[in-house]
Amino acid sequence: MATVTAADIKKLREATGAGMTDCKNALVEADGDYDKAVEQLRIKGLKGVAKREGRATSNGLVIAALDGTSSGTLLELACETDFVAKSAKFQELADRVIAVAQGANDVTALQSADVDGKPLSTVLEDANAALGEKIEVRRVVTFTGSHVSVYLHRTNPDLPPQLGVLVELSGAPTGEGDVAKDVAQHIAAFGPTYVTRDEVAEDVVAKEREIAEATAREEGKPEAALPKIVEGRVNGFYKDAVLVEQAFAKDPKKTVKKVLEEAGVEVKGFARFKVGQA
Image 1 (cartoon, rainbow, N blue to C red):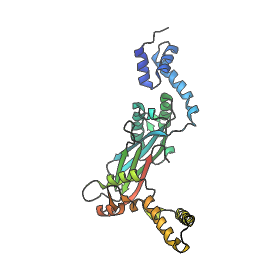
Image 2 (image 1 turned 30 degrees about the vertical axis):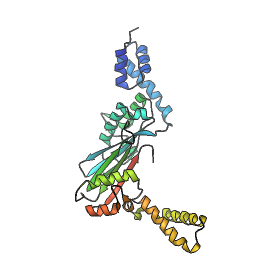
Image 3 (image 1 turned 90 degrees about the vertical axis):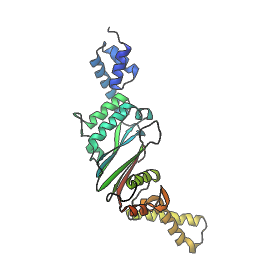
Image 4 (image 1 turned 60 degrees about the horizontal axis):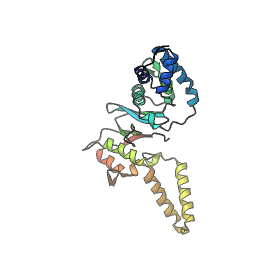
């Protein structure tokens, strides 16, 4: 039987990402043959892929790529634990995925994208096997327009970015500063749902009115005052949920709409991805 050295185990572990004990056992079973050991680890790892299908992927990272200022892609790559999320191999995988994801808006279609001669689905299965966790592209979006900007935020200094915003403006902002980035940072911090109140569905507004009226009645407000109270609370909902009606993060005396007007632009759309959240 061939002798398995610590250097052999280290080499196999660095190449596959498998655990030290698994690497040692694979080398022993392969009688020291490196290539056979790699094959055995892959076989054993892929056998575990099916078992991991139902696991929750509540960790991971958000990554982005810009093509100049006219196009950008935002993507969430998910895994099960923060231990894997902060690993070099997982982050290297994210770089490979975003490289082929530019222009994508559909996770299912992205699975067939070519990554170094393999479809992305196979690359993710290989990573699943090597890292021992379920790994998946949870969502991806691309904006192509007059002016696109991105902001990535680390919620934990020990982890890769877990919050990202992609924003599309109607054109390049005028004036001083980077308004596109400032607005992206604002979206990251305040999490609006809509750009303008016109985007809010009628049934959503109706439900907010219903809740506002029921709450006011529960509080014992006078019947005559209910219409004004309800309108006030619905307007409060708009200020919380609608981007252009929010107080601007960097200058709360102004609304986001005012800041955009001063820069001569409008927000055409935005995407906000936070790891583990819908």
